[in-house]
Length: 305
Length: 316
Image: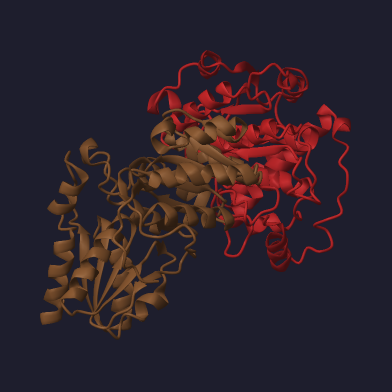
């Protein structure tokens, strides 16, 4: 419904008629675990560069989410960069909208937008708003940014898909800190009531929020048990193990058993940049030039196993 | 049009929602109702019975209801969230801002128990600030019909337009004013009377009071222009400007005098730099358990108050 003005706006801003479209079919099933790992590093580099260029944004959570995002965009999501509003597409809701840079990086690498354009992050006129804006950026299925709200929207999309007997699935990513919001649990109740086995929720369990460790700010206890107690099919994986992510998506997430799925991903905030890892201070801070160069150097060296 | 016949039959405008949403649901399978537990009270029971696959009940969870409606709207559905005005405008206010208005999604918020009509429920349930809150959100349209038929027509118009709409209904029965063939346009005031001495601009359940006040004023030789300003956003600015030559304007609303119809009209008058305004409405205070008519009286929202204000403006 917004596709016409939206595309014009993006083109007008970026002059992308040439390389924005025409990426064509992505042979997703052929993307190997090794390629997904490589993409995850590229996404991290792009996200950190975006935040550095903007001197504003959220690197910590972008880096913790990178591996799941890579698996989704380059293996799992049935989407078409040439037709972002395709009605049968899989949906992805970034409920923790502040980590938009990692999603923008994926949209660029997947061909929704040009690689260069994402470096306009947070600038006036940019489609890459501080938090995802579905009206400005192709490939964003719902605007998010106020924590706790995106999951409800994902539930609405999943109900529509179920009622319309569509095959599409809805993937959502929430933060562990975000689960302090009561609305998350309202959404979870509804997902179970409506038997949404087309809904897959990732919890980016990086254990940190702005003010420090979630454990100290407001303990979340065992999120796996909590989702399970609410009626989700729940599993817990290492959110930086591409093997585990792929395996979980291939088996666990595909069960059509009338139950929504939750994948608690144990992650490290700032993963891949040594000085950002496990540091709440890097939740929403941009690196300076030296820090940025070190980050890129470290990322180019690959992630420690 | 001119209203001369004495209105007798009464119906709550929440019943108009209950009836119209069934008609809409029949002709358009994308019309959804998102109930928040109080479906019976909000009159969605007929819809639920007829169209269970177009209905969702999220339980006592307003915030989630708003988010689900937004998600549905991204897939082309036209969800009507149904609840009480005090919750529909406040408990889910941020969700409406972030997930409905900000992305400009096609979600309608249909609220019963507007204004002081939930009288005996007490101040906790009387929505006196709802339209003001909704009026503050970009992309939002804010409407309250005066009676059963106008409310039905406005609901149909809201369903036909793209974008967020806040619709407010009465819990209590209010007199029928319009016949069922009358047409209404969102954002366009309905002129009920033309006159030269004073202009009265009312909306919702106070239009009936304004009609009666205008009749009595006319009997005393005072010529009254009367507008039913069912849409307070977008306000029919031209209709207000057309009252500026009369110069004496009274607004009447079942809402706080802050931020609702009175404020919207005041903004036009202040910018035009001419005209005198008196605002009749809830006097920026919370209500209490009492019959609806008693609460109107306490807040000075009666036929007598309108007449007194008119006379006051005319002697100034």
